[in-house]
Amino acid sequence: MATTTTPPPTKVGAPAAAERTVEPPETRKFSIGRALAWAFMIIVILISLLPFYWMLRTALSSNNALYAGSDSLLPVDTSSGGFARVFGQQTGQEAIDAGGAGQPINFWRYLFNSIVVATLVTVGQVFFSAMAAYAFARLQWKHREKWFAFFLGGLMIPAIFTLLPNFVLIKQLGLVDTLLGIALPTMLMTPFAVFFLRQFFLGISTEVEEAALIDGASKVRVFFRLIMPMSVAPITTLAILTYISAWNEYFWALMVSYTDKSRVLTVALGVFKSQTPQSGPDWAGLMAATLVAALPMLLLFMFFAKRIVNSIGFSGIK
Image: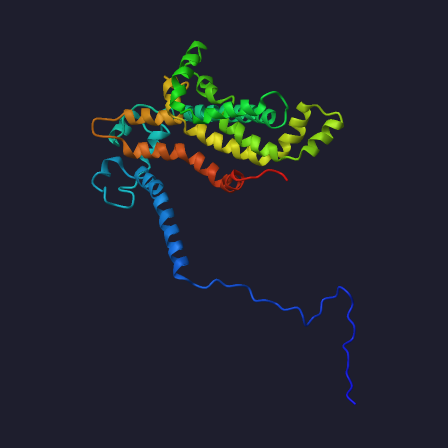
């Protein structure tokens, strides 16, 4: 008579040692398609970085030797004279001997003006746009959606169409050739900023806000103590994008500023190029000034690139 044996009972919830298998980590096999994709990405990166390298190569070259060594990939007769002219560390005669114009450049004044204008635009636009976005997202009032659609239509109006009306307004206010006059047209709010923040506010749970209102908080208190802290990510992203845009603004600043007291870096680069000696443009000095003007924004984007990319496609708080 055959006998059968039964395995001992196992505890409920205890995994059997024999059933656990360790799977080896998945390894990606080499493929021609993946290699071509990486090669294409590297080529695109090199093409994107080439202008910055050429800018640095020209800035570190001697202005008098640039034309003779135009085919060289390395700095020609390496010199820091271009940066010295930008920072005002060369006398007029030394600048002329190096191929510059000889006129003094008030670089630090231009840098200060750019920082002030960009800060005014960023702080004002983010603050007022956040309040407008909260009103469109949470406050109940007649024809709210129609007014928002009308307001959003401002995105379809080219900026060039508003330059003349804004200039007339700034002139009537007596703000021509002032930093406030440069910052004011975009300091209050923009349709994009309102739309950007409104989409996030719509994703915030209304139960959180209703609980605060039941506890006796006003709408203003809810906005500043609840909504704003919960919206740090999109507000930071909007602030960075606004700061970069305000820093790079050129045409409006060119229309409004006439003297060094309100001239920003982007306009100062054009003035620097116009101070060209008869021998030819001061390419070394111009590229040095361009590199110095672009460096703050490159560093800003480098440190916050991940936050910007992650927040552009946010869907709100669930």
